[in-house]
Image (cartoon, rainbow, N blue to C red; front, side):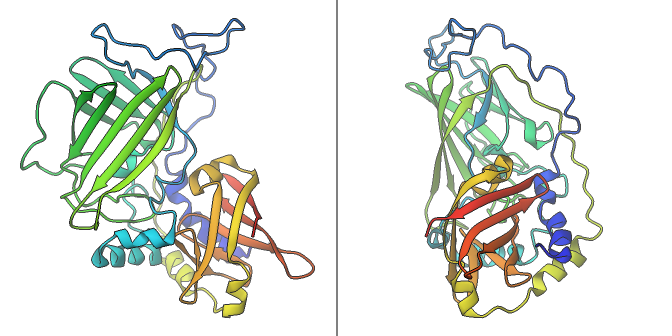
Length: 356
């Protein structure tokens, strides 16, 4: 059973997750039938129909979209060995933020997420015109981006902003977007990886058919990264629904105190930690938590510390741990064999079976 202390600390950990939850689930139009889209004879959206085009013959990206479930917006690094992509000073800053349980996360403080907003985890709407493409994000407090297609170049010496400046161009069937001019007050992801004001982001949007779009994003920051970091996702059209209003309302009064409690942890022997190492696959429970944390979890022991993918786990008891993403509990059978991992956030519990 999860300890009371772990439950309290979890409230702080998941603040960043729930800060932008919809204020009401009774909003209108959630089941409104999207007009003008291709449908099969039985009336269902035909997501494999040909992709629409603009009068100028370019692919039309207009619509409501949602990325496939993925943990990258929370943590760009899913394999601990890939953490070496960050330069030593950037890695040291990341580990400090982990130890502080992301107490300075700008999103938790109702500030824009910057680059982490680009890799949206929820719905977003694309509105396309010949001169500009606009993106509206559901999960970012109603924030928006403008991508200019009118031939302008990125500013040479920009005044740094939260969401940067974006220009785009068509390369065949692909919209290529370059962004720069981010301030360094934001984070590269919600886990706490940093970036500098030299960050440049390149995105590629390619609509394969009506309901599926290939999305690729590359981060290039010579001050914090040893090489560019690229992630690819499938983004799916979201028919017959609508975005919900999101409002941020922070409460940080106890963050520092509870972070200090979490950092204390409890000592565990190497033998105890070693028995948790393995691969765990999602098999039930909250799909929201699984979408945020990932559907596969690799637990490893490195230098006497337990890691969940690339995130350190801080022991609260022999079987319960905290991280900056979720509270973790390992379930053990009567023979002492670890059988299951449970990751908990305010949205519920995601359960993972041990595979090896």
